[in-house]
Structures are given as structure tokens and as C-alpha cells.
Amino acid sequence: MDILKTSTEWAKDEVFSSTFFIFFGIMFVSATIGFWQLGKTDLAKAFVFPTLVAGVLLLVLGVGLFFLNKPRITNFATTYKRDAPAFVKSEIVRTKKSMAEYQTAVFKVIPLIIIIAALLIVFIDKPIWRAISITTIALMAVVLLVDTQAHARLEAYHKQLVVAEKNLKN
Image (cartoon, rainbow, N blue to C red; front, side, top):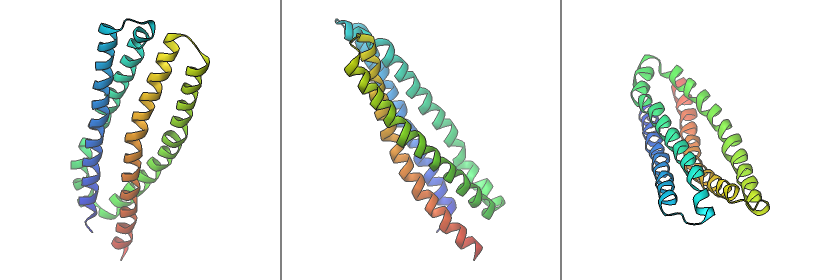
């Protein structure tokens, strides 16, 4: 097993995954324009700012992840060639830390935010709060969808790193 190739493929997949955040960010901004231009009801008009904020957040997240992971593709080769066991060990530590963060943020905090937003829809009758709640649920659903896939990739990558570490010791 070539762990450098695996690491590079993982980084490329992460770069590709970040484009989904960018895509959904563009969709939210497009929805903002639609609500702004075509919104006739109070609820439709109330969606302008929440969808704009959600769109900008997704764009920033997508672009940030893109530029964070893009250099990793070339840095992996340099670091691996310098010291392969240290590279694998540092990647194991990094992936373990990232998986723990996913467990907290993606699988506990985001569902809690969705539940709170759903309760706000039920109990608050103001159009702006309903728009904020609905947009928040949509935003969190996008993050949950993309990050669940990223977490699964990260777990698979981590397992391959552990196998590679054992092979390097032998």
C-alpha cells in the first residue's frame, strides 16, 4: 500500500468536497436574489438577509477549505520523502484529532442547532424568526451532509494510516 498516494487522494477528495460548500453557497446567494426581487409576502422578504448570511458563510467555508487542503497535496510528498514514519505518525495524530472534532461539532452540535431552530419555527410567529430558523435548518443540513461524507473519508484514511504505520515498523 502506498500511503503517500492514499494521502494525496484523500487531500484531493477534500478539495473536491469543498466545492460542494461553494456550490451550496452560490445557491443560497441566488435564493437571496430571488427573495429580494420576487418576494411579495412578509415571510419571503424576511428570507433576504438570512439566506445571504448563510450563502456567504458557505462560500467562506468552501473557499477556506479549498485553500487549506490544496497545498497539502504537494506538501504531503515533500514531508513523506523527508521522513516517512514521522509523516504517518503526524497524520495519525491529526486525523484522530479531526475525528474527535467531527464527533462533537457535526454529530452533536449541528443536530442540537437543528432542533432549536425547528422549535423556534413552532413557537415564534414572526416572519424574520421563521426565515432565520428555516435558513438555519437548511444551512445545517448542507453542513451535515457534506461533513458526514468527509468524516467517513477521514475514518477510512485514518485506518489506512494505522496499517501503514505498522508496515513501516516492520
